[in-house]
Image (cartoon, rainbow, N blue to C red; front, top):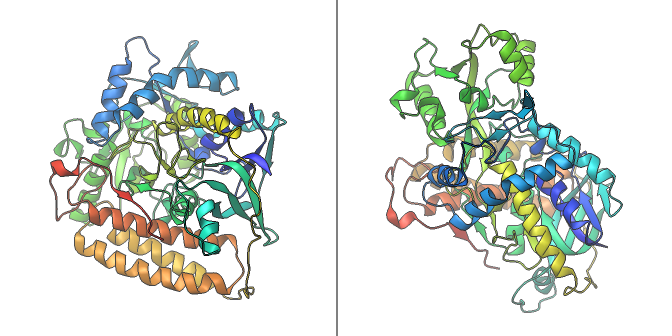
Amino acid sequence: MADFLVLGTGLAGLFFALRAARHGTVRLISKTVRAESNTAYAQGGIAAVWAPDDSAEAHVNDTLVAGAGLCRREAVEQTVRDASERIRELIELGVQFSQDDGEYSLHREGGHSARRILHTDDLTGAELVRALLAAVAAEPNIELIEDHIAVDLITVNTLARRRGRPPAEPDRVLGAYLLNVNTGHVAVEAARVVALCTGGAGKVYLYTSNPDIASGDGIAMAWRAGARIANMEFVQFHPTVLFHPHAKSFLISEALRGEGGILRLANGEAFMKRYDPRAELAPRDIVARAIDAELKRRGDDCVYLDMTHLDRDTLAARFPNIYKRCAELGIDIATAPIPVVPAAHYFCGGVQTDLEGESSVQNLFAVGECACTGLHGANRLASNSLLEAVVFADHASRLAAARLAETPAPTDIPEWDHGRAVDSDEQVVITQTWDEIRRFMWNYVGIVRTTKRLLRARARVQLVKDEIQDYYWDFRLTAPLVELRNLADVAELVVESALRRKESRGLHYTLDYPALDPRGLRDTVLVRRS
């Protein structure tokens, strides 16, 4: 048993683990290899007030405007206030941000009123992961375990239900069941504190910028354990993912639009000013809906991002990863526009937490994309997500450390019960069901919604969940089966949240309720009734 069990090796998990290791032992769990996470694919950067002509007030205001009235001001102010100190600590850990003439290079992205995005070319996430993994490897109090996926959280009340006892209030986490994906063995991993740093759930949609691991595991497990889940209707679709048959999930960073990129139709027409005076620098929800509207109006497959105003050397220097990948696919971005489409990118909702990152289940913390801290509101401001991860990892680790002295070591946790489950010889059932979920979520619960589509999605997800429930307990667990169950739970949470919000706000846009409603200035909070 470790003092802290940390699920996920993205920025949130790595930073939390390093902080927690100052106070106790840490088991850090990666569902695949340690470097694979949503963070690793982040291109743009991390937002902070860094330039002398910028201000904390401006960053706070930009975040509140993007959040469409639903940001929690305290969370926004805390995040902006802590930003510079956390970034200096990242630099001390070895993160190398890009510089121009000895000064840190600052990008500007949609919704920001100033240049405040620190970055490492267009591979910021990979650099963060590199540096923090090196720091983790040098920390004797951290044990990093690869190829294990959490199946379910263990809490006082999940055990009470299993034993037919009345629930306790408040509930408290005791650990998790972990599946070794190589051997199929499910083990008990007890801990005084559990930190969910499991990232988002982009794979619930057919088209996404996320890697295959983004299956909403932490959100789904927290929901099944009884934690409150908030604002799952707010799914951010990134406006510009590369449209190419051989370019799976390849993101075209918002920083390109920050450097003057123009979105054009196939006939060369620039169209964004028809939708917003900020044009390409409007927040992501507006840009994504504009592209979606043009594609549906014209029947085109994609739009084009034109960067030909910049010379080849500048493009290759500022965006080396994007320049190289496009060239490999036969696209010379110095002379030709980049074909792009929107795709599911980021969940603004998740496990509801307080300002210290703690969920409604005692000692269960959620940090990063799987959490709903109140920072993003109805729409995330670009490059605030990496910032949120380090700020809330810092706050969560402080409270988690304080809890060690008052939390007894968990005991008497039963082993995982396989029952009469057998090995499955029909993995096609899993892939078929996964594909079905992703398709009806894309078609019915996408960028633009209607009540009729949402009700269709609700009916479909319930049938799928019933099928998964039967299959789940008949066959021995595999990683794809665990992820499928989690995806179905996440899909249901998104649909139910979207049906409850009878207005259009931020990332949730419905043709049946196209206007803002003052009564919508509240979070959509779901509570599981056991």
